[in-house]
Amino acid sequence: MEFEDKTIVCVDCQAEFVHSATDQARYAERGFTSEPKRCRTCREKRKAEGASKPAPATRDSGGGEPSFGDRPRTRGPSRGGGRFGGGGGARSHSGPPRQSYPATCASCGSETTVPFEPKQGRPVYCLDCFRSQRGSGNR
Image 1: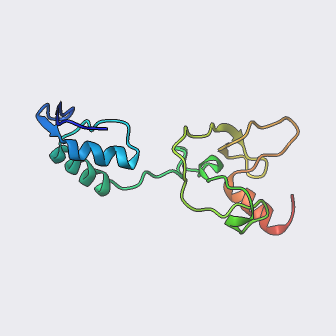
Image 2: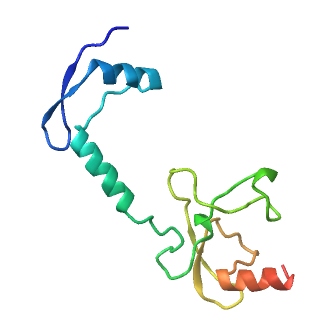
Image 3: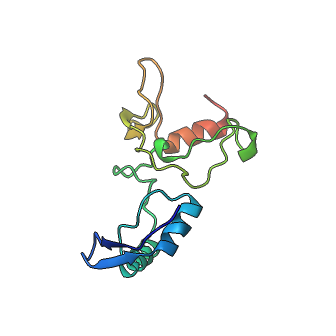
C-alpha cells in the first residue's frame, strides 16, 4: 500500500500539521487504524500533563468509609493470596464504578455503603466491624 503525505488540523490548537507517508506506513505496521488528531507539540504536551496528574483516589466513597466496591476483583490461582483468589493490586480496567448501596451496620449502627444490595434478615457491617468480625472468626 502506498501512502501520501496528509495535512491534518490539530483538534487542540487548530494548527495544520503533516502526517507523512513514512509515519502512515509506521502506523499501519503497528496496526493503528486511526490518523493522529493532534500535532506533535500538543501530543507531547498532553503526554506530559498525563504523567504529572496524580492517580485518582478510589477508596473513599464520600461518606468517610471506604467502599468494598473499589477493590479489584480477580479470579484464579495466578494472583495468589486470599480465600477467594483475590490478590489485590491496581485496578486493571476502566469500566464504570460498581454501584454502592447505603446500609446501617448491624454491629455499631453507623451508616455505610456496600457493593451489594442488602437483604432482609442478613447482617451488614461497616468496614471496621467487618474486619473485627472476620478477624475473630465469628461470621
